[in-house]
Image (cartoon, rainbow, N blue to C red; front, side):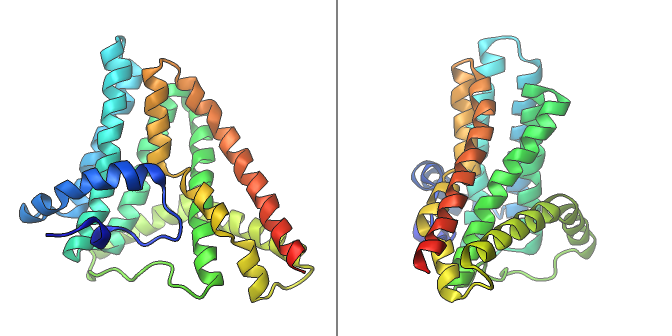
Length: 268
């Protein structure tokens, strides 16, 4: 029987909602799913369908049940299953490049569908991009934290032999949507570090620039927290509370960025 510790993704900073609520619930399903022979990619497609159904209900629901309660519950089920696919993959040795790309990209599809349903196409697309930048910041700050300390960022997938056509398509989609964001943010973070360090940063500068606290804040703006907050706003009948929080979240990360730079300058 697998345990939560065995199936948990190793991260220096952990998201409270994921670790305390959704992953323990998902862990109860890991062994039954393994006995049924479920593939992690199948779980990804199923929780993606749940997210899209929630978005459809947001766009077309007219009652408390169809426009607020049902989407909120579907999103929490989606979040739990979003943890299950990774936990199942790690428990059964089924981690793969295909699964990693598919999970990340299907999350974007769901996020875009939800925000467009709430805000309309133009504003929803802008909100989706802002949310992606927030989540990418968490990804990059964790990567930089590990690299500054000589730690492994991501373990190699256990499985090889992914279907080439599918993997190529997923990598292409990632390159079109995520890679430009990551290059932009990486360039900004790198330039700000060099400015704070007064030149090419050393190892100590890089460590000072990646404090664990910054990573903890960014991790707790992760997708589990985002969908939990959206669901709470839906149940209150105030989804605008969630969408209005996105610029505030970005502002909080900008303030943390200034603090990261200050840590480097204080060290010198």
